[in-house]
Structure formats: C-alpha cells, structure tokens
Image (cartoon, rainbow, N blue to C red; front, top):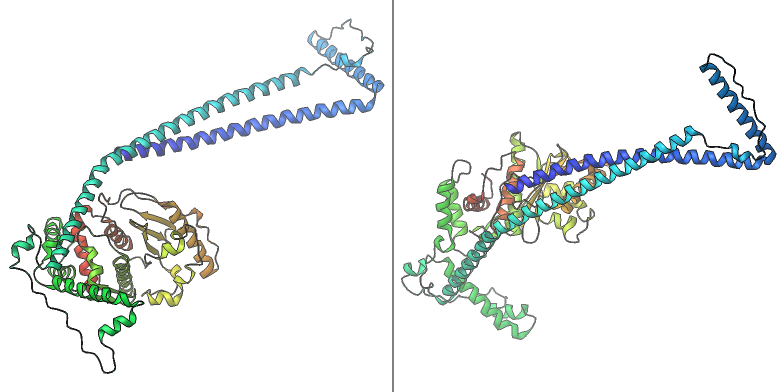
Amino acid sequence: MAAYKSLAALAQDELLQDLDRANELDLQARAIRLEAEELRARAQHKQAVQRRAALGPDAIRAEAAASFRSALAAEAALRQGAHGGAALGHAPSAAPADGAATLAQDPGAAAARERRRQDNERSSREAEARWRAIAEREARAKALFAKALRRDASSAAPAREAELQRLEAAHASEEALRLAARRGSPPQGSPAADRAPGPSRRHPARPAPAEPGQAPADEVVELLSSEDDEAPADEAGEEEEEEEEEDYAGSEYSEDDWGLSEAIAATSVRDEGLIRLSAKAMAAARAALGPGQEREVLVTHLNSGIDMTRKLIRCLRPSGWLNDEVMNLYMGLLQDRDTLWRKLGGGQPTCHFFNSFFINKLYKDARKYSYSNVRRWTSAKRLAGVGQASECILDLERWIIPVHLGNHWTCALVDLSARSLTYYDSYHSEERDIMASLRTYVRDEYKDKRQQDVDTLLWPISYPKDIPRQHNAVDCGVFALMFADRAARNAPMRFSEADMPLLRLKLAAEIAAAKIA
C-alpha cells in the first residue's frame, strides 16, 4: 500500500511538473517576443545610421538642425500652453558645426529598452527558480520511487527464497520417486513406502510380432540410427522408458505422491461459489493428472492442432510451469467457447484468441517489430482453421494474446471497440515495447485488410495494478489464462494465489473434456 501511495504521489508530482513546464514555456515565449522587439529596434537604428551615412555631412547637418528647431518649437508650444500662452524669450540658436552633438538618444526609447532589459532579467530569474523547483520535485519523486521499490524487493525476497527452496525439495522428492520406480520400491519415509507391499514385479516388454515383409523392431532401430554404436543405447533407453511408464501406470502410486491430495483439500477450502468444480470434473482432473503412460493422448484439439498427452498435461500438477501446449490448447478452447456463444446469441464480446507464438513472430524473437512475419496469420482461411467465426479480425471487438517472456507468462488485450490496449501481468510489471508493437500491428492490420489509415498512437495503453498478484514463481501461466478467460467475458478478476490449486484442477478437467464449463 505504501508503494501505491508513493506512486500516486509520483503521478501528482508529474502533473505539477507538466504545469510548471507549461508556465516555463509561456515565460520563454514572452522573453522571445521581447528579444524580437529589441532586435527590431536595433535594426531600425542601424538603418537610420546607414541612411545618414549615405546622405553626407551637409545633409546630416541640415537634418539635425531641422530636428533641433522642431524640438525647440514643440517645447515652446508646450510651455506656452502651460503658462497660458505667455511668450518665452528663447531665440533659436544657430545650428552647431558638429551635428553629432544634436543626435541625442530619445528618452522614451531609452526607457523602453531599460524596461525590456528588466523584464528579461526578471523572466530569467523566474525561469531559473522554476527549473530548480522542478529538479527538486523530480529528485524527491525518484527517491520515493526507489525507496518503494527497495521496500517491495526486500519484502518479496524471503517469499521468493522460500518458494525456490520448496520447489527444489519437491523436485528432489520427484527424482527420488522416479529412481525408486526404476529400482522397483518407493523411497523410505514416503507415503508410497508405507502402502507398498513389496518390490513390484517387472515384466519385460514383449516385442510386437512383425508384419509380413516388415523388419523386426531391432532392425528398424538399426536402420533409423545414424551410427552402428548408437543402436544399443537407443534400445536400452526405450526399454528403460517402457519400464518407467509401466511403474507409473500401476496402482502403487496415488495423487499423494504428486501433491494432488493437497490441492483437492485446498479446493474444498477455497470453493466459495466463485469457482466451482463438480465431482465429475474432479474425477476427470484426477484421471488426467494421475499415473499413466506418458505418451498416452488424452485429447486431440483439431483447431489448435495439439495432441495433449499425459506427459504434457502434468505441468498442471502443483508447482508445475505451464508449457506452450497447455496454454495454446486452452486458448483454442476459449475460441471454441466464443464461437458457441455467438451461435447462441450470448451477448458476450466477440473475441479472437492468438497463440503464444504470435508475439514471438511479431516482435520478441528479433526484438524489433515485423508485420510481414504475421501478415497472413489473420487471413480468412487461417481464421477459419482455428475456429474463428468471423472472416476478418477487424470485425471483432477484442483480441487476446498470451505473452511468453521466457520465464514468465502474461496476457495482452486489444479492445477495438474501446480503442485501447491493456497488459495484464501477475507481477504488475510493464512491457512497453511489446504493447507499442501491438498498437502498431493494429494500424497495419487496418491498412492491409481494409486500406484504412487509422492513427493508433492515440490509443491508450494501461497496465492495471488492481488485478490479482502473484507472489510465487510457478503460477504465472494459470494467472495469464485466468486473465484471458475473464477479459473475454467481462468477468471480474476475483481470484487469488490461494485459488491456484483449484484452478489447476479446473484447467486439467476442461482440457481433458476439450470444453470449457
């Protein structure tokens, strides 16, 4: 909360700075006008000097004498008016031999120049004072922001360290279970060790009978190998993998070994009506995340072109990092739901869901914007291939894009109806280059698909900080999918990190059923 207050104060200081800059620009414009007037007066004086030089000495003396006489006449008229028309005994004197003495400066011009000089000095002093005040405000704001960042980093560091230690311990436990599975007995002290009646019997894998005219399995491996000495290693690896899968497929291990029982217990605690999971969905999640053959295909999603195997979906177990296949298949299911809603007339915003490779092609891989890399991604044929009901992506209201930053998942939203962009990050960070590339992509889509020049530079980009926040290092993918789901249906972001065990089970059940409830 202190960090938010400091950020609010920083925003207020920035607003004051903008006002000060506007006042400073006004003062500078005034100083420029005064300087222009002074330059114009100097130019007129220079022209007068040049004109007098061109006239010659005699003409200059005559002009000076005439000016002096007119000045005396004007002064006499003024005095006469002041004294009731009394005559003064001043006789005009003869013109001096040297006319330079009569070219005295005009008192009014000298006073005007003095006033301009004083105004310039005063403007300079005011501008300098304002710049000093602005610099002091910026220094205070930067100090407050740095202090808030240090406070957040110091408070989050112990939590991150504890989470990393927990993940390392879980990884070590999983490796011990795998090693025990290969040896035929669970590790001592594990729940499986108490339940195991004894070493499991291993059955050697029986080779499938060869078809007529087909080489045996041994010969096939040799033909596929590039070198003769690689064949025995490949055979041993395949035999070891088959034995490992057979051990996992047995009833010796349960969800307790993978933390599923803890997740299910957390589900019963956190299910407050906002997120519900039926008994059927719970059973589907257990079956999908439980033991079994790793290469077994649980579901095939045609629109995304993904075969979801048991090995791939296991990333939804507690503390697992979500992979591209799970992210993209679920985005495909969100697209299927959007299409169904439109057929039923559900009244939800019409959306298009990109996959996780779109941003990589648009900007991230080369770290520069490239519209040509993704120009054909939104052709009518390709849109139909991913289950999009609209032929043109510009007919939709929202685009939702998962963003993979290498070790962190986020979600981006392009709202064509509101002409705005939003970046959802569970760490509350900002990726301005990626969002700027998306804004440019919208402009290029209008120009390419509809031959329209749309100025998207005025479209605002927001980075909301009032969304659920992640404090561990493993649940960013679940957060990103929940952001996408709720942004697509105008649902409130009412979930938290404590809901992650339940949401992981929900994702597993929906992926196994190939349908979002």
